[in-house]
Length: 223
Image (cartoon, rainbow, N blue to C red):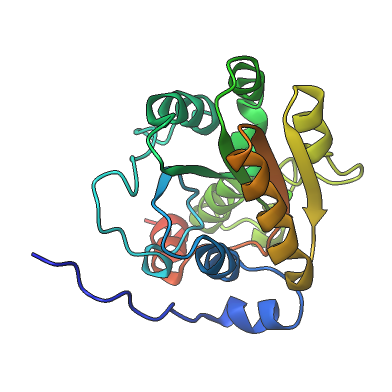
């Protein structure tokens, strides 16, 4: 049957902050969706912070799945392999990775650059191994420990990690860090143009921390 019309993007409390300049993951998705328009896109990887309502999938190749089993670090390598399979398909291959997942498998970028596999990486960079912050919050609640300590050993700041520099070091186009909504559209447009020219492009986007309410509740509720 003919696919239904694309619904309006969902809104959340983080979108209010995004409108003030900070970037939420749903806000980032909306900007990207507007830029690609009617182009055929294949998402090779998506982070846990992705809101499924922000981008409906209407074709089997619109989203190729995830690593399975919660395998953190699998995103970059899986994305490069999927982009190789999609090369010359006419689709725009996009991997949206969390910064923790990206850093654990970032050397896959060299393979993509070496074998001339055009693709776009957008890093939803909350400067944290945030999935583990969520787990530590859950354990803290179970053991009646201070939840405010959940960030210890998980935050990746002081110094900040230069993800765009890491990309350039392996032969990719590195852009960022992008910290405000007014920077985002131009950065993504530049990256898509590089991919259309046959390159690997990585955009480091500093995003607000957090998951959808349902995901947060499921991961932090103590049993």
